[in-house]
Length: 207
Image 1 (cartoon, one colour):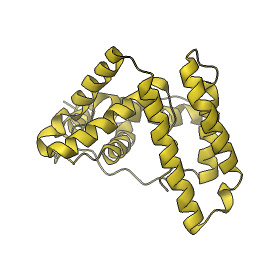
Image 2: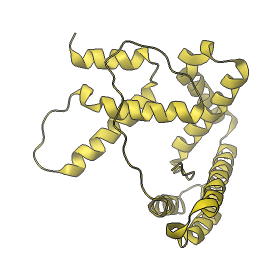
Image 3: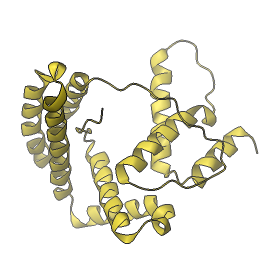
């Protein structure tokens, strides 16, 4: 069938959800268009490393196991992430957009978070050791609280739809996960979809 078909078949065999595959493809195109210059046709397999990178992040965040597959996908090259200061600046900028949201509840959630992150940003570059770990712990707590607040803004029908979408994403892994592990992964999957629905940035910093 060709390399593109084999690549997509490899993603399916490993359980890559469609939404995660699209996220990886979007990441590839963001870099592609940022380069400028002459355009050439983009083949699906060019996006493989980004799709697998997004998939690895999704699995790590939800705690789901690997699915052995004989597909062509390789291990993506490691990429250095942004500094803590840059992460905070980018997060504040994205949260600031929420201030103009048509949802008063969403804007109300964003305001105190922006204020706290702005205060942290001033000292982020010089943090080391325990002081840095304390800030990372606090960022994870802020992230969880923001997601919980956004979840509470969803009505029952919306939340039910997100739960069904989470079940679809995890379907291939369910038989391989003990019930308590699956239940925790499902909560995390719903949280991810809530975050995606409201376009919330990830505040937790893992570096």
